[in-house]
Image 1 (tube, rainbow, N blue to C red):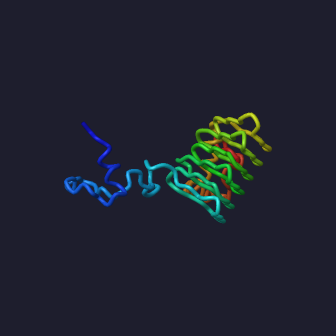
Image 2: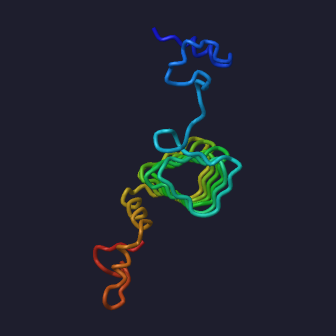
Image 3: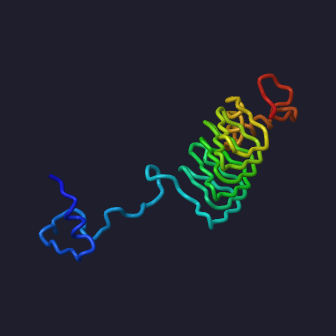
Length: 184
């Protein structure tokens, strides 16, 4: 049967049991080690409370912000949590956005936006699903039309397609009284 006691007995006592040297892992290594990296599958990346960022923040993994961020946050395919210590002054584009701290800016969630009871948001929300917990502070507007979310996400993608519309003969810009094209 598997026995945990040899690991406990050998850790911290100088490796007294010499007969277990053929184990695949060294006995001296702690049983519960610190996380190794923040790639997918190992939990979200974290911006700690003492970190201040100014500018555009983009990424391809889930993120927890406990610090200060000013600018734009773009995690379209991933989840963002603004922790209780987080103070954000930015527009945010993410799959799911959860606010537990303070945020000033617009939120664009492709799946949903959640404002916890400790959250304080001053800005507009565009998401198909919105959850405001009892006690949450919110000042702004809420747009829950899924098509509105899709159009905002499409506008923030690389602008190869819109440039082709601007180069139409006659100097007509995109969306100017043309059927089938929406003006934002």
